[in-house]
Image 1 (tube, helix red, strand yellow):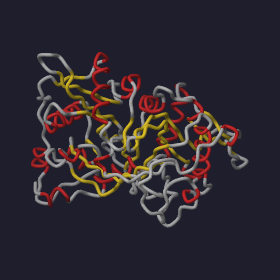
Image 2: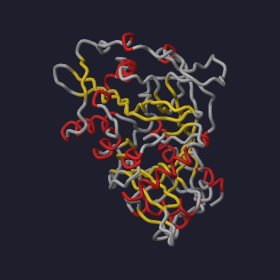
Image 3: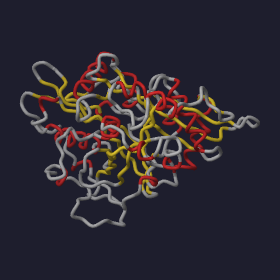
Image 4: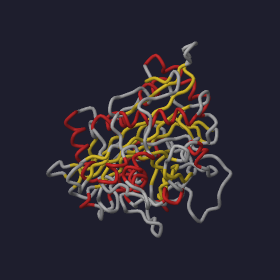
Length: 417
């Protein structure tokens, strides 16, 4: 397949990055109007780039932080969502499944599973009060949601206790009520109450002002299905048989010592991450407990593998991906598109392309239809050779109440769900 043919992908194939990246937009923010964000401690478009590193607003004392929740319209009330309760996580799942991010053509919608949500929202140090819902008083129906989880970040060499903001979602029929700004202000207040004043979040839309702008790339694993459901199409002068052959992978991994990660590997993986991720300008500083939570394999959620020296049995490299399927909204044959997303990795001792090919094989073998990866970290070193196609949407990274120089995608070592 020529480069030109490879670029001639359908708009549907390029929806994945817009799905994954619209974490905090809800369609309310536009480049021409930032009524809310212009009032927040974030870099603005009319400001010059800075070489300074530090908070935008000074740290508040406990007495300065509002103790009561922000007011809502009379028919609504705040609710702390109990994500460890099977009944309530099912309610959150149904709410997100019906109202969260979907592509512009309403063909696909993210399908965050119940196990995935509990994994995403209950890392070490999680707090119930940071799983914030808005309910209708009379019916108790959930109509708004936002979350925060703790994360210690290294930002241009400075270590900060922060939170990752995610899952901002408003019921489709209520998006004119401007609930999103109130939810953001309320989660900010709750985080400030425990002495944390910085946050990181992502968006597919342009808000004031991106720290880093990254792009998704897609690798077909099941091209026949992707074409049938409208996710991609046959390139010019290509038959289905030739397309399948182009994307064919070996039956099993081929890297010597490549195996599934086990609990005994946590210390080794933590050591690899601490050595590698200090080189990035934005990265999480993981604890042992966090590596165990985020990286250890969890069936149908996250898959992780190590490369072990056959002689010394020492773990030399590791790689991981998580699963995030999408509901296929209008197709009589298929109802789910299974997607893998490249997560954290350290590959220094083995050839990068070989390990990443093995990860593609493992994703294919657990039933994934497509494999997605940002151009962060060292990803551009293998994307072209492994037949990934570039998307046309961008994922923007933002910091709340922190100023610092902008960074290139390859300087970014943070992956958000």
